[in-house]
Figure 1 (cartoon, rainbow, N blue to C red):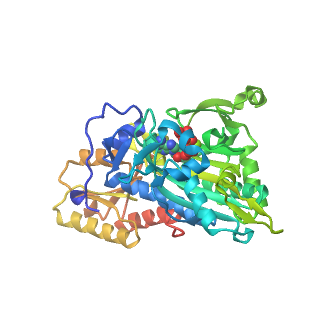
Figure 2: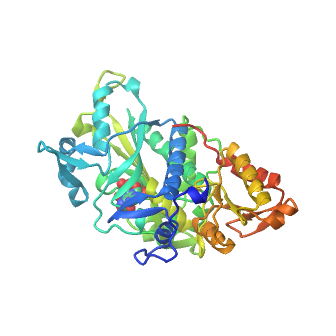
Length: 451
Ligand code: ATP
Ligand code: MG
């Protein structure tokens, strides 16, 4: 993409309404524009990041054997009356009446809708286990929308729903989600720590939240510092093996890690003092097992092995896709701007032409551009007439992890400069070497399983 033809409305001034770094940087980097309180337009650069996060979520869900689909944003109130949540949900639910006087709502979540789909089409244990998920916009009329996309009113969420015959099977589905979430966040360059949480209005027995540690996080967290040393990594956990998935969950939950809602000072006191940490975190996902809470009142039943009709055991599992954009920035930025992890960066590399109009420089840039595009790694090509300093400042602000700088002096010696946004270190090399290095860096970040 040529910057001269792109739409990247960066701001010079720091917007005064933004209280935290990620919100400020998303506005300054031209990623979002507020449409109304807690509702945002995603400008091209922000949209690219949102799509990358969404793609990783899809890939890891499909890898875990979960089935993508799409449910609508607007739902009929009657379904929510069946579960009893139409009245329970309160002011956070945006209620709408259509022209025929029917009560509708903008879905804050989808348990009712998915249960209705399930009961219409599934009648036997033979069709279980089943996990269906979608990634769709939600609306919650938050009393205090703030911090940009972190606490929006309209936000993008992955929500998955598991249906199983027994509690035991449902716990396997829960553990499978646990593992898939760890993999998902790690691919985004994030560490999200699973913490025992409180079940809240959805209700249930088992629930964990995944939190990214950040001073600006809204949740208070208490943890054993040793949990920050555990990684999922590339271990070969088999999603079909309950023992495999449970082993991962056991490892990650053996150490103390809880939000303030479930914090227990007496248990925490048993953590060696030097490892006791209190801090703040951003909730980027949550998994729930809630048994037959919806299947019973809504009649989602199947026949079991003995021919009895029994309500299915359910769970729901969410990832805050749009919140993740902010959370990643909170975890990865500096004074100059954003520092994107390779997994989610809007462009893999910035290509900066220091002398547009100079034949040799333009030719070298064109060559690098084509070579990278042929590898599926299209750069953001700064071909504008700006000064070098301004170009570098924009690159630093928008946070592409790598920059290739091309100027007449270097080209005369067959050299370009490759710079790491994270370390600031630069290295001179041939155009071929720079292309090869970028290809190598992105090899582990290629798209994997199509949704
Ligand atoms: P919170 O406690 O932050 O209000 P929640 O527990 O009500 O969130 P869930 O129902 O667990 O949210 O939704 C799943 C995920 O969706 C959350 O983990 C979070 O990442 C994201 N999310 C929830 N509310 C918002 C919001 N208002 N804006 C952006 N993302 C949100
Ligand atoms: Mg939650």
